[in-house]
Image 1 (cartoon, one colour):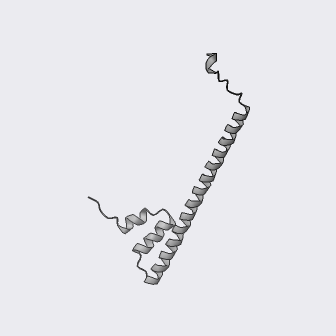
Image 2: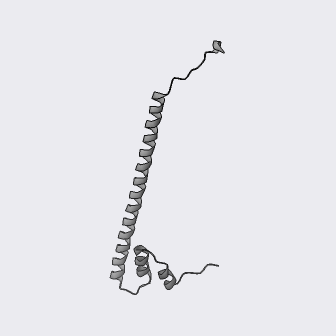
Image 3: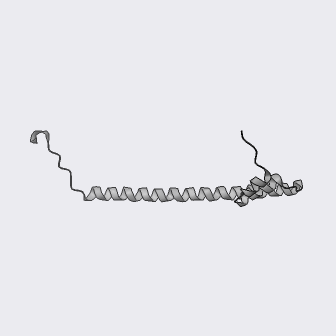
Length: 93
């Protein structure tokens, strides 16, 4: 059986500005204009958080691409300096 979280329980679990803004929007007794402004603020915070997450994803992707490029270069260099393979012909066996 699940129960709904009370406003106080929700507020106690709020750890970020976005969660606090959501709490204020949902539970505070403010006029509709202020609620609309709070919702816009929440939207802005969520947008910034998404931008930061996308930035981190792009940074990680670029890091992985550089790592793969270094590995490809190293493999090319190893192939260049490796002695040619000695493949005996069928008649030599």
